[in-house]
Image 1 (cartoon, rainbow, N blue to C red):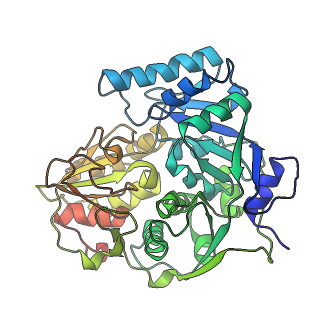
Image 2 (image 1 turned 180 degrees about the vertical axis):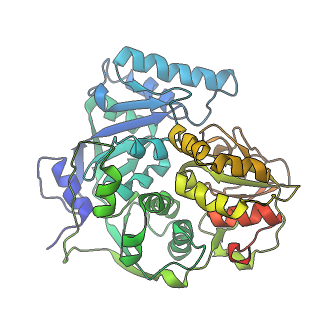
Length: 417
């Protein structure tokens, strides 16, 4: 019986033991990352288990959710990470170096195909785009990883999704992610890994693949994975000297479910309040007036996302009643946006640009909504009250939809611009 890529990766982390879905195993970790929201809790729990981090060279801590610090409490959270990193000799990135970890970690070459990666953040599934097993976990489990260099997991079942066909004009991988969420629902992949394959995937850049994997957790998935290929190899070529392990699922691998998606038939999509899986073609909600548009964050804060939106905004002005906030995912993305003129395009259109952080996605800073306000965002969640007031309304879309909506001041099909 053949094996999936996930089984093969796990086997390398537990000395080649034959693993099957449902097995409970202790596995070695290749990289651990935590932020200013989850890290302080993990540190507190760690101190009840051990004195020294097992593998400080595999640990990265950085503030990203509340950084630059917005108040005393967020400053103290960052200080806790900073102090612990200094004590343990682990890596720490502060303001000016830090970014949203799901953007900064891959561009920094810290991961390779075949790795087992843990992060105390639910959107860690984004990194499965590199052909590795990326696990989001709670602070206590993360504390155990710091103490032992290992974590306990139950080997997940895998759902295979085959995307075929060429994307329509101004349809992007975010639209594929939202379309898939509509198929699976908010719990259709509970503790499963979604393996994404097909000729559509073959044609996607790494930026697009990360955007697609980013929202797997919104269907309850443990993670997502895209088998590594030449696109992966090219992306990593100048970022790391580690070759990695380019595993592929066997032809006779056993999947719990197989889903086929005709990507050529997928239109621009949105998620309606108050659930990411509450999806619909953008045409069903066109005309809804918005107060704010957010472009960026962990789902769509990469350079390609900014390029797509800027190409539509160039030479135009956003609607006068709209606040458009652009959040590059890392200092590198920000700098490239400045060098290439993308930043000027956004500013000239009437948008503003934030330092890299997760602020509006968590409703903590840089774009909090007031009562009754409506936002179209590329961030991955639209739960009630997520971006501020409990009586605000959040719609999720991709960069094309975000730019079109900002221009017209109402939710708009980007193919109409």
